[in-house]
Image (cartoon, rainbow, N blue to C red; front, side):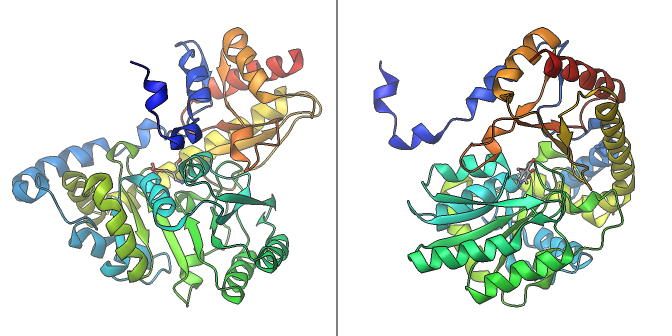
Length: 398
Ligand SMILES: Cc1ncc(COP(=O)(O)O)c(C=O)c1O
């Protein structure tokens, strides 16, 4: 049977596989800076084991049953409380529980994007957000960044132009804190300015925030959602980096109207996020496991970031530059302009036994070819040093 002839036109945008294919060659002796995985030693395994037995004893019938699409009420209340410590005021009714933030990105596409609609993002931005939305055929508009995050003055200019052209701008997507892929954090002034632009032009803002829980430097920033007085920020966060990504649990905080639409869009995707998982995270919050665990996560990742920065300093040839992330999981490396990091990856994996994610896919037009993203949280300290040494050799040989 010729499956290719049966595929929907949508599948032509489903192009995630190239890098995954490459990384599949990665045998055990390949050091990978590729994925965005937490260090497994940060998972609160003992606490989760106790919580799972408790949940199955205390409310097995609820935990193993179907549940409401928006998520169990007690968890939504608990997340509202948790968010208040971060300056975000929300009621349970403003919250929907998702299968990781990745599902929230998909819901954004389903609910908001028609072909040709404009979605504005940082450039570069989170690759899997772009992948989720490409299926809906938006016009992606990228705004450059500097060390203070998205260049909001340029954003305002672009918005003005787009409005003058009669474009339908659906939302501005930002990862303001410890951004994926650059690790950079938007200054507080820019956050306020971004919100002013959104208010002036009556735009929605999507704030994706998996990383602000573990900043390595004492940077004074608040979530943009905490500054939002006009209910225009759709805030996404997740248990993935502060508890365990295997649970696949995230949440959205937004106006009740947006939550209602997300609820409808989620029904046909998966009916509800696993109840068992929701009860596990609920207990994790109630028992303070998340907040108790955070200082260890922050300390370990800061040391790993520093180890990678030191190795880059030691081994990288002249002409290679990189960001100094204020948090999160990634360092963004820029190679000399003649280097195509997709090509480099083939050689790096097969000859030098080191892997990374080429930068192309993080750009809205895939135009920049000499950048790469390195993850520093998953590899061991030894692998960080050895992997960067190998990567430097690959770059010298390129
Ligand atoms: C910016 C950003 N958004 C969303 C996600 C998806 O996270 P999850 O689906 O595990 O919550 C990630 C994961 O790395 C991310 O970096």
